[in-house]
Length: 497
Image 1 (cartoon, rainbow, N blue to C red):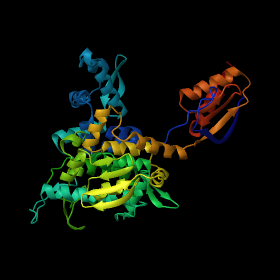
Image 2 (image 1 turned 90 degrees about the horizontal axis):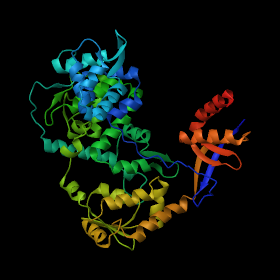
Image 3 (image 1 turned 30 degrees about the vertical axis):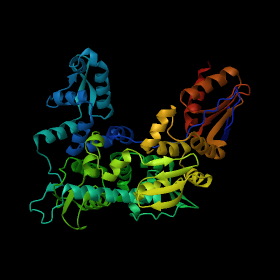
Image 4 (image 1 turned 60 degrees about the vertical axis):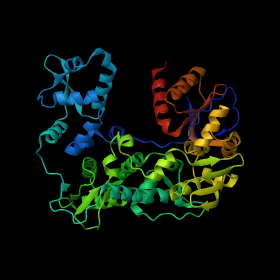
């Protein structure tokens, strides 16, 4: 029988013994889920069935499906009886078998259709009754009117698309400025945002509370800053939806309204007269984040912005990105790094200056140029906040000036940054990462070598093994995998193999 003890395992940063396998987990990265992944991983079948009562949500699900899956739905949408699986399989050519399998798996995972039996013992596909009803309403009309409707009277002071784009980005940059402004060692002032927005940033682990520095950005938050605007807004809104029930806002209503906004027309005003109190509160939150424009809080007219239209569209990154001349210049690169650790940034963007201030010590500020230096203290300050050396190097490479890339190609280097700078940043990180602590459970006192090897191999197969020593028959598994390993050990012991 194996003895177990809970504790913490420390793995050194140096070379390990050949008899020791240190499988320590790396720190968690930012997980950016698309709409399908969000529904598959965060919603139960009962919740999905409740969501499918809303036609806008069904239309959004249909729009994000693979092309073959959309063809399947259209072909069986108006068929009132289950369709044999053999018939559905025959609709695709043999060369598209993999795509067809992926499409059927996607529809099954989202509970758009389900397996049922028909006379003769055959298996068949049947669309979810709720999804089928809502999709028919989307195509043919009918059902309850959508809360968001076109305004009857004309706006006396209409807003054009250019104004809406500028407004949306100014509001969204307030959130980004807050992320890089709080706890910034270079004295940058944080933008003022609502407590609700701060709560979402903390819930998404983009920021964290620190006893010494207050609220500071995390390594996931730094990765968040490197995403394009559409991906940032979608990730932010997913975590907002996770907390909407706590605010007394039904998740289906909020998700339905978010998709109604994505189906709206940019530059057209809409009326909020059909919305209840919860949806009016939701509208005010969207207004703060820049997804809608509304002159006054109680005005019954609002304009969806490009952020709302692009929030769920995969093609939005390429076809309709909100960009300014300043953003276009950034695409070509604006940062120069010298071998003496000096950093020159040709920008006048407060946001970019604040991001640089997370890991550099800013020295001079000119109208279109900022000069800083990478120091041990500035980099260690960023490392304490959860930003990794790899992220700092990646950011500098991503926004490197074109002239630095010419040097890279001339000397056939893997990085456009000076090797001394890259190595020193990583060495400063290694000073702090001499030990990696992993919470786990110790298994020892095995009666035989066979028992030890069997349990160790099982723990390794499910990726929960942290450390093992075959000579002493001792192993450490992650705490969250202890229950699975324990169940397997009991089953193995009872079998008497």
